[in-house]
Image (cartoon, rainbow, N blue to C red):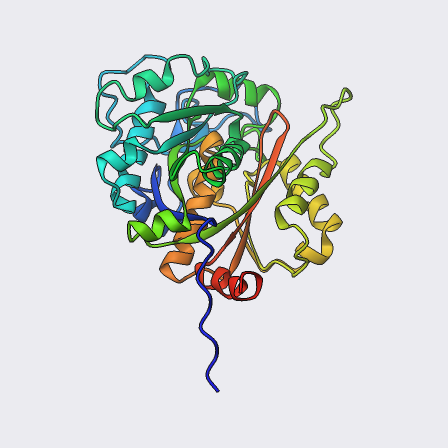
Length: 377
């Protein structure tokens, strides 16, 4: 007896149908994500900031080459914005959005009708002057049409998942047929590096543990399954609910106890207690973040105790801040689309310096259809 044909994904389900990216690893998502998969790293010595701390035994030969960062992107055209606030971030984002349009095979009009939910650096981040007229300048040149609706989220690392939650709500409520969720941050900023260094969180010769600053813009396209089918779009992944929580500030400066991230992960996974085999993580080389994830894994041992596939692409392209979550979404979706995903579900989580924690579960289209045969028959 032949197996029953899986039922189609419900028309109101939220699906991911396109990715776009520009990173230190490549000028588009295809190149960048292939390099991540291969474990190719592209770091460089950066003279833009000189650490104050002296390593044991003194500095080595060249005092101007002590901070390692993701290699600055040589193919980013500043379009006359050199020196202007947010100029490099805007240049990065334009390239990622153009790549998304090509990847998702969107017409200019279709992109203009979409909603854009944009993750930006945290408002209080040193060296970042706030959203201000960032969006107005972003579309001023006409390289990318301005979407009908734009909302910014200044929440840093987890901002992409917060934006994802808002975009999913807009789609579920029928306010939009498709949404773009994007994130961008260039951390190659002397003021920001100085602030990290003062807190012992910048990796350099005198501080072997810490983050490697990077820069990236990444974007994903969300649609309802019905809208995707109508335009013949290929579904890369089904998107589950986003779990969010906020870390309670500690007056004594003690590290996180993992409670907020645990809550976010538990909320994202819902009542499905099946063990996860694949996690795409916002780990960036900082001890505190690794410790926090370890505590979450202990609390949710039945769910996370045996995760054989843990992806943390910061080891290839550095810490990219507000682009982190969308970068992880793009990596998971492309893995499903290209057939090299190590499991049919991927947990993605992200943690902001300001306390925001968020997580979401991506599911392969095939797995989603199998579940639909049971739930919506």
